[in-house]
Structures are given as C-alpha cells and as structure tokens.
Image (tube, rainbow over all chains, first blue to last red; front, top):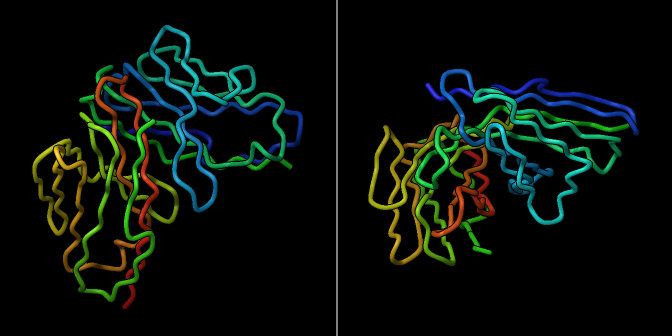
Length: 117
Length: 110
C-alpha cells in the first residue's frame, strides 16, 4: 500500500518552454501533497505544500509564478515549471500524506529528472 | 528553522558488516521518518518513528525525542543497502512539513 507515482520520470525541454509534472497517490486519498527539489549530492528541499481544493503554500524563496501547483483532487497534484531555464534543471520529487497533521507519514514518488537545454 | 544533522556523511562497509547512522535535531519534533534513497532516486520509507524503537528485518531504529536524536541500525549489510539514508523531521507546533537531514551516503562492497 501507500504508492505514489510521478509522470514523467524524466523530461528534456528547451529554455523558455513549460513543463508539467504529475503526482498521483494510487491507493489512498492524499489530503496533503508536497513538492521537493533535489540538486545532485544534496538533500531534499521543500518547495511547496498543497491541500486539495486550496491554494498551495510556498516556501520562502520559491517563486509561485514560476512553479505552479494545482491539487485538483485527492489523488492528483501537478507542478508546472513555467518558462523553464537551465538553472531549473533538477530532480523534482512529490510526496503525499493521507492526513493534514504532522503525525501522518509522507510517501514519496519516484521523482522526475528535468533537464532544460 | 530546525537543523537536522546526520553522521557520518559517508560510510563504506564490507558486505556483512553492521553500522549505526545518527540523526541529531535542534528542536522538539512530533514526526521523524527514516528513508533510503536508492541509486535511481526513489525514496523508500524505512521507519516512521517519532519516539521509541522499531525493527524491520535487518534494520532497526531508535528515537530518543527528549535528547533530540535518532539512530538507524543496519545489520549484516548487503550491496543492495547502498544509497543515501535520510532522516526527516516535523518540528513540533508546525504544519506537517518535513525537514530533511544532510544524509549519510552508504556504499556496501563485496
């Protein structure tokens, strides 16, 4: 149980284009979903938290107009990187939690490797 | 914000050896998770352990919340244990945001 999928697993795009990444909880309802970013040989950094049906909460320093998050249903959240630039190249990982409280485990997707050329 | 430090940063073991990984955190927490990130980047949940001790096969974990640390024990290590181990915490009184530690990179050799 507690499986989270991401699509695509990797994507290459040209500078200036937009890329959408999907995150789905396959066997549970995800009240809360999270988006993280990981640079090579570094730890995960939280970008934003989203609850179904409401606007995402972004961490300090994350441009909300550049990283658009939509939590459309209890099983789907999307991250759109708009007007991507080479510095946006990174490993993006989503997680999902069945509850809103801190006592709930988070379950992670396999990640999406984005390369902007 | 809360600081989460892991040690050692790198560890090389021969297959069959045992190891202990440590996670120190700077504030009180009400959620602590251990993860294994495999070479393809997938984070695998190992333990949800805000306090106490748990065991799962060759792995066990102990969190002493009052002293602000957690330990992950790996016994009889195998090459498939290689990867990066992260602990992550949710600071008490905050929302459910996980703060990840610095990670321990483990390599198990034959």
